[in-house]
Length: 137
Image (tube, rainbow, N blue to C red; front, side, top):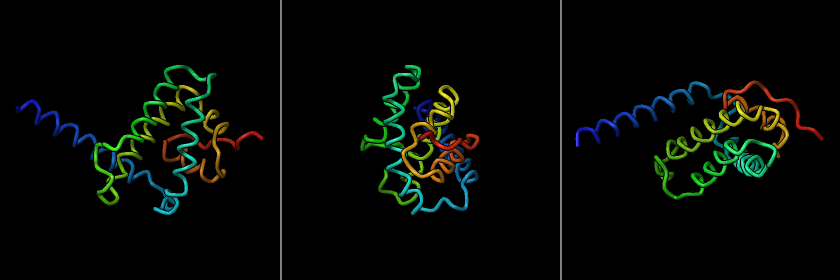
């Protein structure tokens, strides 16, 4: 029982540390309204990246798992809790996008980004990436 409590406490501390890092990395432009406007673009980005056969299989698997996690009604922190309920989703998305960009390249994010260039710049900053170039086209 003590081991389970220690593991749960460790997971909680890790989650709180990730939230603190996210809060520290946030920008002044990141408001709730901005985040809500970005949400559909981020979901389309993840879906497009997951379907891109030119990306490594491991990258695509991570993205499909991310989509599954976002679709599941069960989260680390329930979404009904204001603000922090969605914070775990933001942390998981940022973590996954950072991992994907390291493996596939930030140009893949730019190539598949469906929204405005400002949105891509904000997503890149939240994922800890250098600013991506403009999408081709």
